Structures are given as structure tokens and as C-alpha cells.
Length: 322
Image 1 (cartoon, rainbow, N blue to C red):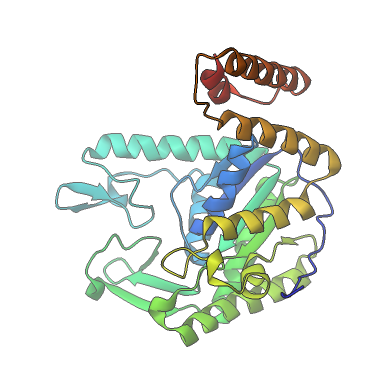
Image 2: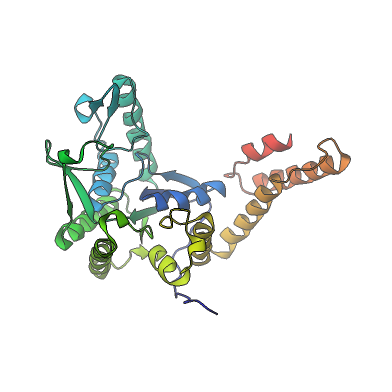
């Protein structure tokens, strides 16, 4: 074995197919959420878009839980497009009233989801933040506004720890049954410099170490360590050599399900995975009897699974087969 195999503690409680799972944080969080969605789990991921620092993550969780609705004061006009420093650029628009309605509806549906969510995944990316000079507010997204409008600095250890503590308390007070899983994004923010990136990640790890000593029922999954120790090879990175490649993300996904799924969840997952892979099959002759029999057999497997597990939804797959 020519790599370092990490010991990862199994989850004390396992993820079930009937569980609701919420993701918030960096783009790595979205990538893992995609796997859960693909394999038919009940998932809500980053309703306001990706975010990276502990302050913005806390602010957006607070917005959802406390139903802090937006109004016209939360937006600015960039040429003819309305944007908010609190949200991703995907939540921008030409018509302010429609944009406000869209985001407030997201707050409402996200609040309902979090009321009985079973798993709450948070992926922190960086300790660096941007403060908008005019409003003195830490932003989630600069929207490519001029750099002179912002102060860029690194959060202190105390600031990070306090936001970790506030975030966890906020979630636990709102939903006592949810299990919180924290990860640190393996994406390196080299625009600050290699040394500065290490300092940023180190502050997150140090604050997380302290908070885990205080709150012992937190779950931690070592995404960062997997990439640094098990996947020390650029084949696991995308073309920019910074973000994980599809192969790297799939590897982390497999390490996660090995630790977080029980036998029953794994069996359902494997059946679903086989069906999804089979649906990708493209024959040379679509009108052949062989392909008709293949589709009929696959449809029967789907119907059997749906009968066994009423919470599963194969409508996309059935469209390909009917």
C-alpha cells in the first residue's frame, strides 16, 4: 500500500434513506450533496449559494432559522442587475420585487426543512473575510465589485471559535434531534498565498478542536485530511490543480458512506446505484427485442423498489424506460 490510510471513526448513528439532510458551506459541500441527491436521499443544499467563511455561514443559517426576510434594503444595483452581498450571484435579477419574493420563499421552505432535518452538514472553507467598508458588514459574496470597497482580513481564533459556538447553539436550539457534521474543505485558497492558506485552515482546525472538546456529540468527517494524506496525487484534482476532480470527490464519497451508512442503507444504495448505472446504457439498436426486454426488466426492478420503499422517486429513470 503506497499511501497513508486514515483511520476514520464510524458514525455513532447512521444515515438512513428516510432522513432529511441539509448542506451548507463551500463548493465541496455541494459536490457531496450531489451524490446524496443522485442516489435518492432527501437533500437541501446551499439554498443561498456557496459560502466559505464562518461568519457568512452563521448569518445565513440564522436568516433561515429566524426567518429574517429580505427587502429592498438588502440589495444594490450593479448596472441594471439587483444583487445582495449576502447571497450568491445565482440569486440576482433584473426585477427587484420578483427577486425579493424568490429569496423570501427560499427562506420559508428552508426553515420548514430545517425544523425536522436529521443531518446538518457544514463545510468551512476559509478564515478570510471581506468587510464592506460602507456598511461595515462581512459579506458572503463580493460580486466582483471594486476591491477598494472592501477590507480583506483573516478572522482571529476567538472570532472563529465564537462563530462556531453560536452556529452550533443556534442549530441545536432550533432542532434538538439533528446531528451536526462538520468538514473542512480540501480546496486550497492559493490566491492569498500558500503560507496564508495554511494559516487560514489551521485557524479553522484549532477552533474546531476546541469546540469539539466542549460539544462532544459533534460529528467530524476528515475531507481535508483525505486529500492531503490519502490522495497525494494530481489525478485527484481538476485542471486548475486546486479543486478536487470527479475521481477525487467520488473517493471521498465512498469513504463517507463506508463510515456513515449501515447495512440496510448500503443495500438500498447499491440497488439504486445499479439501476442508475443501467439507465445510462445506450444500445446500438433502440427498437430491438433485446433492448425492449432490458427496459422491461429494469422497470420491474424500479417498481419493486418503489413498492418496498415508498419514499423513493424514480420518475426521471422511468421517463427513459417508458
